[in-house]
Image (tube, rainbow, N blue to C red; front, side):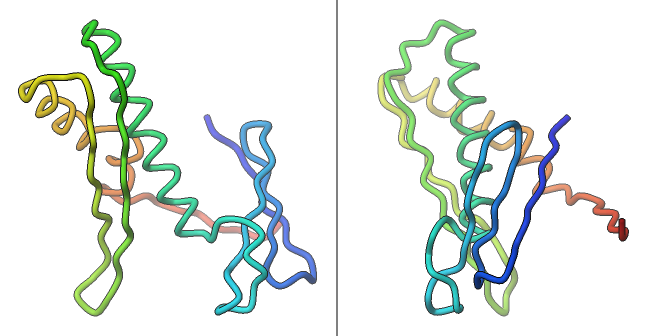
Length: 127
């Protein structure tokens, strides 16, 4: 299963992340006191959902031997007094309408999509 660490020092708010053997720097923008040295936390959330969606749909199209030329997953996080939501738009090139509709249906059941929709228990403890 996945494992990661995030470390922050005195630099506001640069955070060094290690996950899956990869290094990522996260930060906040200047408006929140950061230096914009990397994606902000909600940007990383969108990146995770976008990558999972794209990979899952590519795997499905490949398994079906469909002529998928390209797929773009555009994401927007929205939060306000009426709640939070993510708008996801798929741009699919190379498939017919029926195949495109099937990919949109599959997108609703990708692993990260289901995790976000169903919620997740987070247990926090001190080391």
